[in-house]
Image (cartoon, rainbow over all chains, first blue to last red; front, side, top):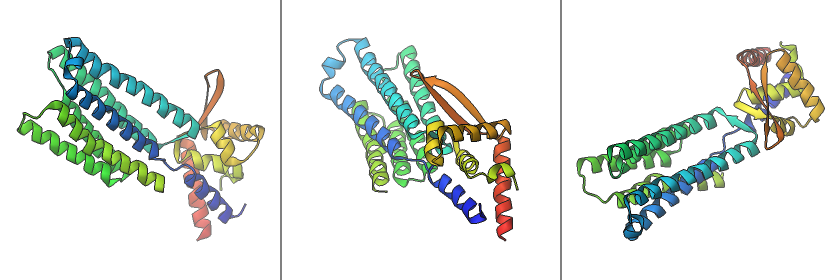
Length: 190
Length: 89
């Protein structure tokens, strides 16, 4: 084997194990659509969702947990099919696992303390996860979406009074859904 | 120059594992375009020399083999690249 052949083998091997970010875009689109749909349904059919104290908790915990199980299963299947995991895949997985854990902690604290909606705390954690992800994958739209969400959260902390459900709709749409679609489309066109 | 990495299949395996956290056997099979038996032999040689770790498990009753590079394997791969570069210069 000549030196050129050795270099070619190394180059080809590295090229074949690039991180595919399209599934990440699909994850953002899935969660964006799910949370926006849930918020709009809750907003327009409040009597149905809030017919008891527990119904709201069940609505906002059970459906996201089912979503988490579904998407985790999808991501594992995709990973097995792909056959390898890059360092970047692992970092992204850890960031979103930590966000999932922080979501559970926010929900648990709000239940223990009797706070109605931990929306702002969750959106804050989400904005940080989005900004960090955007910086790591070097995709500006995700970083900008995360920063917009962060500004939105800070504004609502300083000037409270907005409806939490509408806040969820606008925050998730501009912070997650639209950047997620652009990531999915960008990687598809590549 | 490390003789173990002069074999094209072993070089493909080690350069892929150096760029990933882990790879499964089927992916390496597709990447190296070798037979199952040959790949198994080459993986075993790399494992015996502690360049890689092989993790065997079962998923849905099917055997699942994942490989990852060790610190020693990464060092040897880096040395191999440096030796190629120095030879080219």
